[in-house]
Amino acid sequence: MPPIHPADSSAIRPGWQYAAAAVIVSATAGLGILLRAHLTTIDMAMLLLLAVVFVASRLRPGPALAAAVLSIFAFDFAFVPPFYTLHVSDTAYLLTFAVMLVVATTMSRLTARIRADALDADARARAAVMVSALTQDLAGAASPADILDVAARHIGVIAGGGTTIHLYERAADGEAVLPSTGALADAATHIVATWAARAGQPAGPGTGRFEDAGVLIVPLASDAEPAGVAVAVLPAQRAAISPADTEVLTALGRQVAAALDRHALDARHEAARVEIEGERLRTALLSSLSHDLRTPLASIEGAASTLLQAAALPHADRRELAETILAESRRMTSLVTNLLNMVRVEAGSLAVKREWQPLEESLGVALLRLDETLHHYPVTVALPPDLPLVPVDELLIEQVFINLLENAAQHCPSGTPITVSAALRDDAVEVTVADRGPGIVPGSEDAIFEKFHRGPASPDNHPAGAGLGLTICRGIITAHGGRIWADSSDGSGAAFHFTLPLAGLPAAGVPAEAAESAAAGKS
Image (cartoon, rainbow, N blue to C red; front, side, top):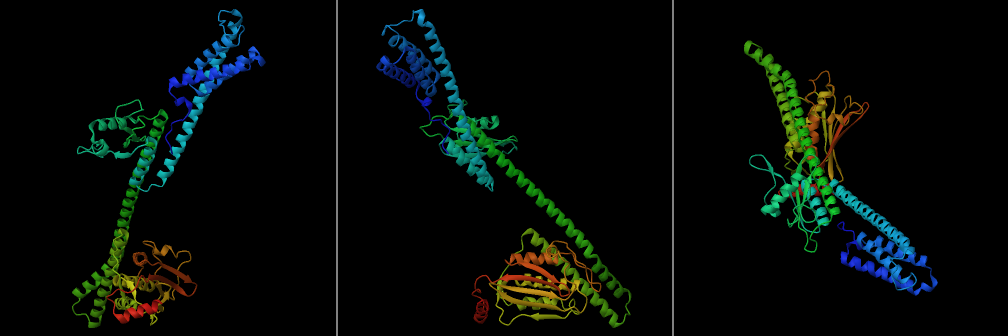
């Protein structure tokens, strides 16, 4: 967008404008002399008056007034008989001369005002276009750096030279000051920039303030507080800027400062939201920890107290108490592990170390660890023999299997069969953990993956856990680049599905026969 410099004839030097007015009136008088035999005196007066109106519509009021006076003398000299003599003292024409002067002067002022209003309207329209373009670009700025780039580009277009942005910095005593670097390294420029920032007005050539500054200073100041300044170096062929440019630059500076304020406010709101969410999570975790650990701790304490106080217990009773302590300890370990994993998921610090390996290894370890929990649940594993290797973090996928199998055991009555199956789907392996229990409450297929969501536990099992198991599963699977979901059919239980992408070929460390198996399975 070009700078706002109305390129009309009013930009011509005053001397040339007076000469142009004289030429126009002289040419009109010459034409009238040629047509004098066919025109009346009134016709010639109107012709000269038309020339004055034309001059007034194109040039400044001074040349227009001069054209009016010159047209009166031309009319008196060339068109009032006897020709080529002056009749200024002739009272018969004094009223005509006066009327011509008044009409010419009035028309000059009116046309000059109309022209000024038109130029002002044009300047304002172009200014609105520039501000709108800046607003649109600022809307797409995602960071303060992007905002400053947009500001430098738009202000540079109007100023016609290179532009740099300098924001306030905090001094050692905490006071906000402009930096003394770059264009502001010069002491004089720094003083002008400080004044412009605090006053909220541009300074430099053409602004009426610090005309000898050598650079144009545009403040970035909103209604809140100054944000900084833009320093534009005017090109040699443009020693100053127009008043219209000054107004536009002031508006642009306010827009940029407002955009910086909005971004800072959004950042503070986001930081506050994260802090509140973190505090809420910590409170919920502590509440869940204190609530869910109370039962296993009480069981362990009771069993240990009985062992200490009753030294002559039968072997079977002692074994039962020891198994209770072991089972409740494992339950506590599972709860703490889930809580720690939840913290890692929420903090975004869940590190995934993928290695190509058979899926049955993670599943086998999970089944061994859940031997006591799944003692009364027949588990069927249906993994196809040609299932390829998968790039996974063995410990994390093992935790996914543990959480899904524990979830099935918690919500299904004893004796409910559980099936773990897998199949190749395009470039991923889809794993399904299904049971024949009561299923999922309709409409809660997504809610069950939210933090602290607890479903109803089976009456003959322990109460439901902290409500973090499925949330952790979602975090782990998402970190692997896959997705997890659940579905349920009436009378057929619940099924949890998750995918593990087969990204790339097996690493060089994978044995040749395993690599061939993975490649064959993927194909």
